[in-house]
Image (tube, rainbow, N blue to C red; front, side):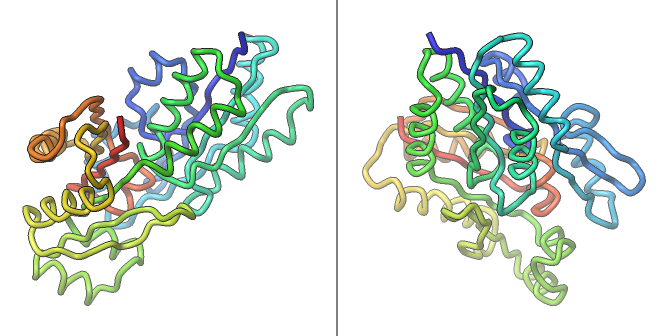
Amino acid sequence: MTHTVIVTDSTSDIPEELAKSHGIHVVPLRLQFGDESFLDGVEISAKEFYERLGKAEQLPTTSQPSPADYVRVYEEIQQEYPGASILSIHISSALSGTYQSALIAKSMMNENVDLTIVDSLSASYGFGLLVVQAARLASQGIAVEDIVVAVEQMRKGRKLYFLVDTLEYLQKGGRIGKAAALFGTLLNIKPILSIDQEGVIYPVEKVRGRKKAVARMIELFQQDLGNIEKINVAVGHTANPASAEEFLEELSCHYKLEEVVLTNVGSVVGSHVGTGTIAVFIWPT
């Protein structure tokens, strides 16, 4: 049986217990608040991150793992599982240098190591769910090349939207101007965002009021999914599980929910969209 080990980075937003149960190796990005530096998800939790974000005058910065960080993880895997294949899946290269760093690490490894690096062209649990599926297939002894094909098909069938609660962080990050942010806040505008096939975040619609925005997001999913009645769903939240549960309750009025995952929107996306955001990822059963 082929033995394949799955590696990803902390922007995949896979709940810790889920990553552990599937033997997924998670390499953390680094997060910088002023003079303080933290390993994402290791030295700072999602709750602590959003508490700091709410008080910060300037947005934190993030940096990808170094090639040496990846080499260390890959070599540890080789020592623990001699001859194993490694499949390393990462956040969209359009959003972070993390994928490029993994590619450099591959060039530093022994050429006999069976190492495959994949650009997910997505972010947060939008690719975390692909990583989990890859780990499930790996546990069945599926070959790496077949896992890559399967997760690519899954990516194409998966739909996702982010509902942003405040324009403050989009303005701080330079995504919108101050005048637009002020005007939008006065009108109670809630942007809906998504990620395109090139892995770039783009605006879908602007809706007045959160309740209407939630309803509109569900309408968008219905348009995308057609007549599908059963779905798998993951809802990312900004250390506020109640908001995710409220969305799930609304969604359950329209679909039969099979696999359900609650997770946190991590620091990379979270620093740009801010508190109160929910991210919804749906894939067919």
